[in-house]
Length: 607
Image (cartoon, rainbow, N blue to C red; front, side):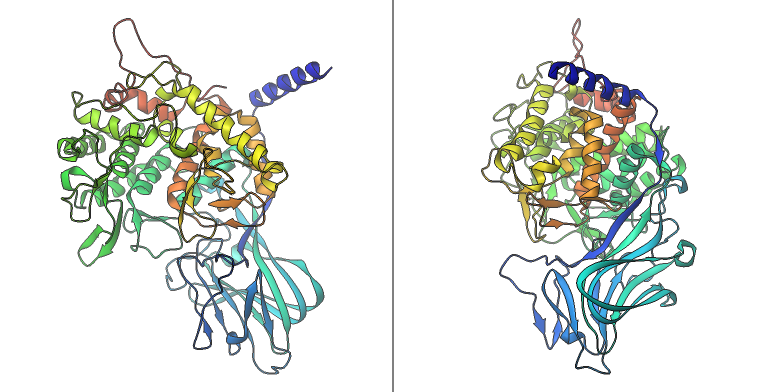
């Protein structure tokens, strides 16, 4: 009976995956801010001269914006646990409250949130969600005023609540999307005499009438697009940073590719014309950068004369590989021959002979001076090393082939390492042993995916993560947003999950099951209209809502591969990869095409 039930279930899931996707409009709550504290246990927020000072590196809203305190009694605001409290019972005239920017930093007056089309302007109207309600979670007694102001400080909406509640309760209020098309600040004000505690503020997001698989891709792309500075052509490392302060070349490349692919039929989340314009703007900006030996900086920042390498960072070979792979694919996809020619010329200028360490490895890059090689080389097995080696093969097919260490085993069992190359190349869907180390990449990736799932179920069987089916021991910001964390299945007692791996590895998983998991994560608040959270605790008690562009890029491209597989349509990224002469030359580093032997691959567009 059990076998029969399992067989019927499998047939039913197969039938579901072949049915046309059903459009649906939904209400999904997007936190503006849940007032949990982003500091290590035992540390307290600093106060200076009676006013609270917050570290902008770790303190930001769930929208990737800034926030602050206001009012004559702001120095009395208490934030010692996961709620913000005001005590004005003995203050008959003083008031206090908080402001939250809804788009960009508060001082960036040119940025605002359109409640009638809530995602970045690049996203086509057919996919744009609307904001038609607001929610505040509050307890206490007194009077609480809520306001939305424009980029010109005009009052667009307001409401006042009379409260007498001993326990927190959600209060939902309607708002007109058309009245808030240039919303800048969302504030709450506790009026004199009030004793209140606020747990959080939320936006009621009404999704467009699209299928869930389209929504997942559009939301993931919108998360990445929120980091794009259209005035410069660069992508910020984190959306809550000021434009020009800390821009990522890897993220800029991933955004270019994501923009190109979501412009393709049947989606056109971005118009093809806008996609081409965006890619050209990006490459025009990157062409102006210093590129010693052809290598791009890891991070750049704005200076008086343009953009320069960010002080204290390096010129990076893997970021160079990510950028040029992305742009080559994007230009191929958009059939932009002029852009293709410029990118190919830039790649040809990379001097790998000057980037090789004494033992033959390609260095991780150059120090800030643009002359001194970094002492570590690309030797560990995995996708990062593969992308650097394949970029070298485009420039010089006769370059020495140095084998990787621990073939088939990702360093520490970190999830992204087995998947990053497959964001660009279909060749690694194959179980043909590669020509360098004899690794069967498809098996290695499937083994990693199963190990990732088993790790949580085995190590933390009774946690929220296990019950949700959450997995992803990978790399990204730590749980408190103040350090980079590299996790993996080879390490004991890993309790921080980076959910981007779910989408990165989705081409290896059952697509119906993956979308079901994403729906559960949405209900749990880990996948919101502003995208996937950066990191989450296995206990479910804490998560980091930071909008980081690198993992956003991985998520957007992974969401596309998942979509193509689920819909069983031709994969546009893989089609461009197969069509590009340069990328075919790159792939031959691992899968040479010889007479009578052509590597077989499994398309990500099929189950």
